[in-house]
Length: 102
Image 1 (tube, rainbow, N blue to C red):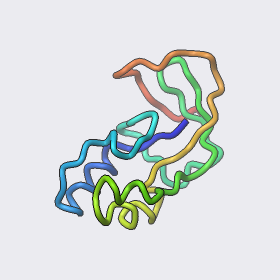
Image 2 (cartoon, rainbow, N blue to C red):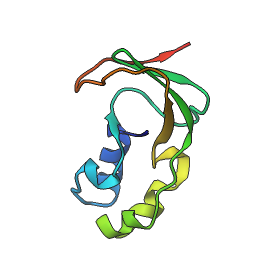
Image 3 (cartoon, rainbow, N blue to C red):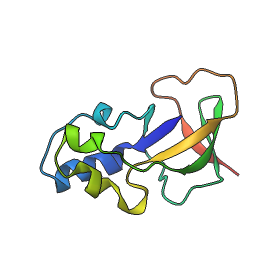
Image 4 (cartoon, rainbow, N blue to C red):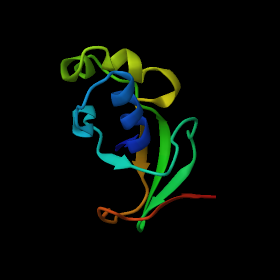
């Protein structure tokens, strides 16, 4: 499963002076209020579902198909998001609470 932060996406769009929807990133989940940078090994709970962050998602060439320069802008500091292992058999609802599990 892949995740991207709403705040990062908005910053990318501002930086690139564009208005491309976050769905262009092709991530499974758009999250807000939870920084993903350097979160490898941490567990996040979204509603009743727990996800273990496995690593950083590196942007592919398709990002430039969506917007010229997007791939390069996403490369530093986990701006491409994270990929995670699903730990629970649960549904994630739109608007679900999100928090780190210690």
